[in-house]
Length: 174
Image (cartoon, rainbow, N blue to C red; front, side):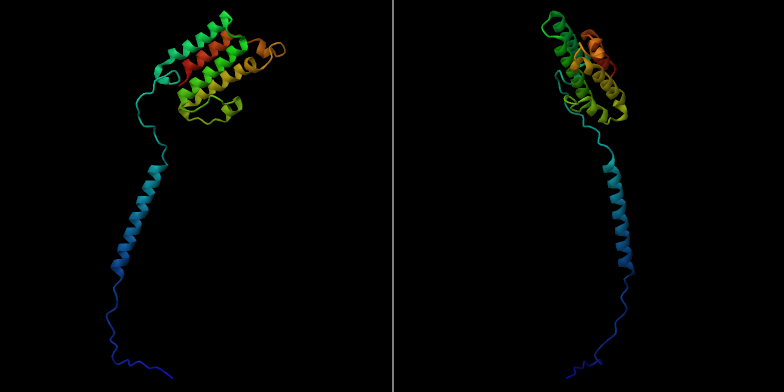
């Protein structure tokens, strides 16, 4: 059984003109790509921290360097009075150095080892500060952890010198 359709009724229409819709779609695609590229460029830039209400306290740079020097001086005075021994003074001075660097950099460096600090990446504006921190902690490590009776480097460091190193860190951090 074969089905046949009469072709006498068929009318050939005018050809479809798709040029204008295709041009509109092409222009829309180009505009969309341009917007996406602009967004990618804008969103890939590092974000600047928003200005917020100043935070106050000992562990913030907004209180000034005097607070840090007072902490350092208090450790030296406690050691001179005999309230803390040399090892405790070194541990506290290293903590002040890490606390100050944490406040100045905006990163928590309180438990960073010297190896962690060497791995720490810093932007160009804080590179000198991080180098000073590495040097200060590196100088304090023998005094903080080594036995002075066995280790010459640990024996050669006293609390006053260590306090000067931490004070220099506070003064020279940029």
